Amino acid sequence: MARRITSVTTFLPVAYADTVNLVNQNYFSIWQGGSATQINYFHEVSLSGQAVSSSSPTFMILSRDSTIGVTVGSVTTVDAPADPSTAALSAAVLVGNAWTTAPQRAATLHLLNCSLNAFGGVYFWRANKVDEAIRMYGASVNIGEISLSAFTGGTPGLVGGHVIYETM
Picture (tube, rainbow, N blue to C red):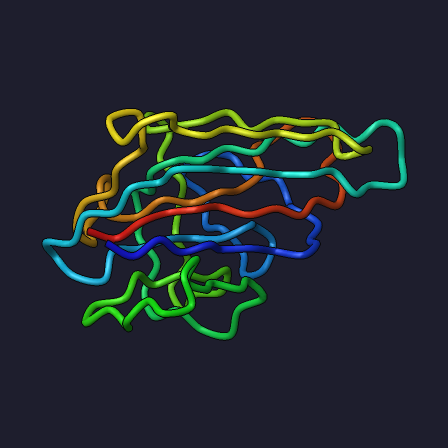
């Protein structure tokens, strides 16, 4: 077991409709399984608003993806082990917000509505036990990739945050 933390200091999300290509570095991150048999558990999602405007409704969605990203590129996310003595995984989860082939959020597989007012608002979710954790299996369409991105509507503002996940 290896718990990892993906964090983003600050970014301005761009809102996208479902099943539309996510444009690089305009979303929080994508997580894609490192192998066909890998199981990952998502334990925590935390977003904090950093906008300067008092009207910044930001509709963030944690969702499975119906089109998966191909070849992760230069990213602005930080992904690090929670425990510094964690050994490197033989098949690490691919994490990032820049892909050569763009991913698309699924229209029918939304997992968490992480909406907040980015003017100081906070969104926080934690699985209390492992059977409440969100699972990702393998690296295939609809089950092997999860994204955190903004949904259409509102006026997205600057946010930062972290996601804690675990590879089994």
